[in-house]
Length: 90
Image 1 (spheres, rainbow, N blue to C red):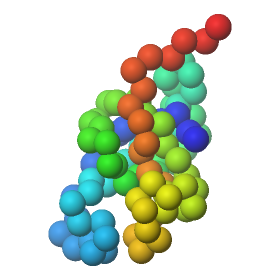
Image 2: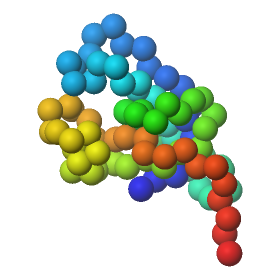
Image 3: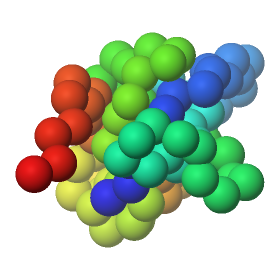
Image 4: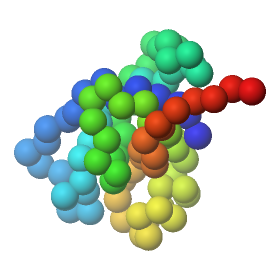
């Protein structure tokens, strides 16, 4: 799993039939202090209704995405799985 910040959304007039009804968001990895790391934005399927500016947990692994969706028909590799409310490092 990757900690990430939601930077934007994607509007698509044509989608794979298995993605209809799901949002696509632009996310960027962050560290535990909230600073952006790396130079790679990612497109992630959003099934939890996150919004721009949210800190989220992202899974980047096809098998995990297929298990969450319950099928292997959608061409998805990256998915937002949770909104992070707080980070507490002990």
